[in-house]
Image 1 (spheres, rainbow, N blue to C red):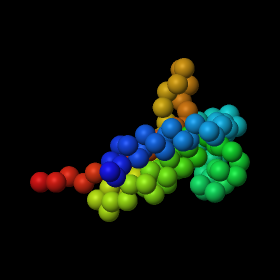
Image 2 (cartoon, helix red, strand yellow; image 1 turned 90 degrees about the vertical axis):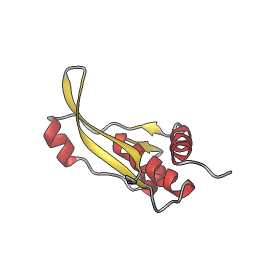
Image 3 (cartoon, rainbow, N blue to C red; image 1 turned 180 degrees about the vertical axis):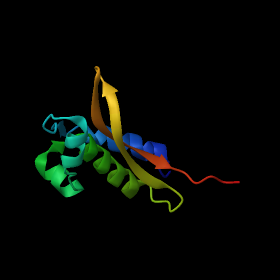
Amino acid sequence: REMTAVEALVEAVRQARRFRYIADPDGPPIEALLADEWDTVKEFEARGGGDCDGFACWTAQRADEWFQDDAVEWCVVSGLVKQRGAWRGQSLNSPTLPLLF
């Protein structure tokens, strides 16, 4: 049986556990977010990990390889979230399904 989109994402997250988290240098939130350089999947793998956007891009790429359906788009979303009283940049991914009427 083929994987569903959610199963593909869960499997990608499970496999991503082999990589380590490499934080970006700290700084003012907006400046840090603007200075952040996103790794390609190959760079992420070569470094043995990355920060949140590296993990988000890697898992989206892998999930897309395992669940290929033109009706599903894998989106990486970034923004600021408040963590322990400080605003920090954060990225995550999600399959986006079309609305069917």
